[in-house]
Amino acid sequence: MTEQERSLFEAPPIAEQERMVEAILFASPEPVTVAELERRMPHGCDPAEALAYLRRRYEGRGVRVVRVGDGHAFRTAPDLGHLMAREVVETRKLSRAAIETLAIIAYHQPATRAEIEEIRGVAVSRGTIDQLIEMEWIRFGRRRMTPGRPVTFVVTEAFLDHFGLESARDLPGLKELRSAGLLDNRPLPGAMGRGPDADDPDGDEAPGQTELFED
Image (cartoon, rainbow, N blue to C red; front, side, top):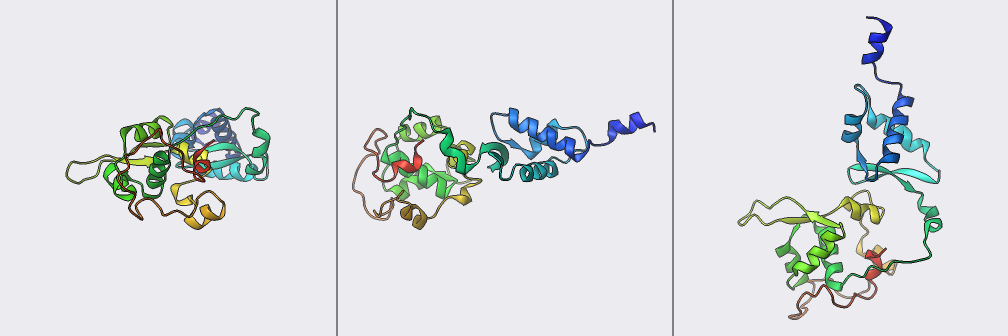
């Protein structure tokens, strides 16, 4: 086999593979999975290893390589986030119903509508679900293999990315939320009777909770 033929079958040096991963992540508007990197890169490449090298290279820099769900992406270093603040703040209000529904899905996913209603103690309106889907913070999951095969809901990578989480396992606990002032000491949804209130996606925001799910 000639040198030219051998070069066609040999994987590029790891430094070159690292450059390829860097270019793909930089150009992609969405997190990129290792499987997607493998499909794009030449035969024989090891994108996982190249990605590990790249993550180490960006440690301590102004941007870093972070994991978002199953993918990876470039993100601003957390301690420099204040430099990215805009003078104009866009307020995105969520009703108490939407906040509670989102929290239940995040902590109990995959969750069906019936399970959400059982925890909250009231019916979940279609408007609340639609709002969270339009924000791309929840999506449809797999159907349950139970009578009626109800659909389930799970949080999205956009939700994880927005709150700087690698996975739903990184969600803070109740003590952390309360110590940070992001959750008051009222009983959780479903812990006590709430009366016959209907779910109103346009209702009042929950004091002390809205900040957790706002830009």
